[in-house]
Length: 138
Image 1 (tube, rainbow, N blue to C red):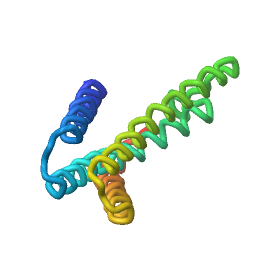
Image 2 (cartoon, rainbow, N blue to C red; image 1 turned 120 degrees about the horizontal axis):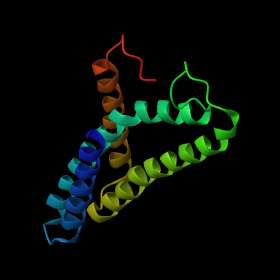
Image 3 (cartoon, rainbow, N blue to C red; image 1 turned 45 degrees about the vertical axis):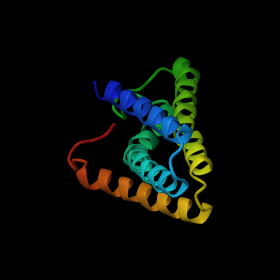
Image 4 (cartoon, rainbow, N blue to C red; image 1 turned 30 degrees about the vertical axis):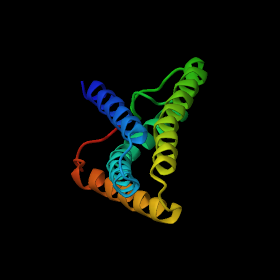
């Protein structure tokens, strides 16, 4: 259910950014609004970064079911392909929407990069604080 909500949230966000990018708002209002939406989006991406990295690690070392389960060697290639697909989807969610928001908002590159890197790091820190220390992710 969480995956469904995540996908729906991302689709809604992408449509909102496209609509704002196409509207005729004042340039200054559009610039700050796109910067705010981009910061919210990158906070979410930062929040799921740790989980995605652990998921990719599990698939690339051929242990998608956790360290207690030994996957047959025949499935190594299949797990690598799944890991690569997850990585491609993650990069497609991360990169193009940021490029679009920066270009449409005509935002200074340094300000845009610094803002989004800081917000992403805050998302990672929030994930680490809220994660249950006793619960293994894999």
